[in-house]
Length: 146
Image (cartoon, rainbow, N blue to C red; front, side):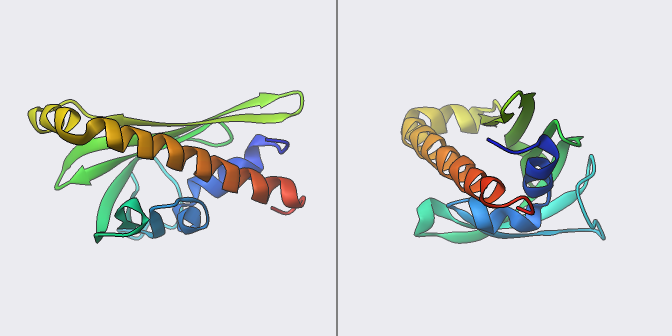
């Protein structure tokens, strides 16, 4: 992206922006009095699965929070992490390389899921990550203020 890492990080690390970029998660809010990104901070996201439904809330916990370098979080079911989302920012001569990644946590349930529908979900996540990154790129490259 033709923008400095700090501008991009400000967008991805503030989960209240998630609805601007994600095809599935249309809003999010910090929990437990958190006002912004910090390691261990919790937030909840409002998800419309596959952009059509079902609609539900997920609770998440920040797992990586290095300004201008990385932001990551895990999605929780109860207190157990089931998957992880991560953004890595690498400065370049022209701006910043931004990588978004997704990882399912290993468990017997996820093993069954991988066989039953994992490939479809993987394709969907890859498509949605490309969409998210394009939307972020459009915002940070549109004007200096983002």
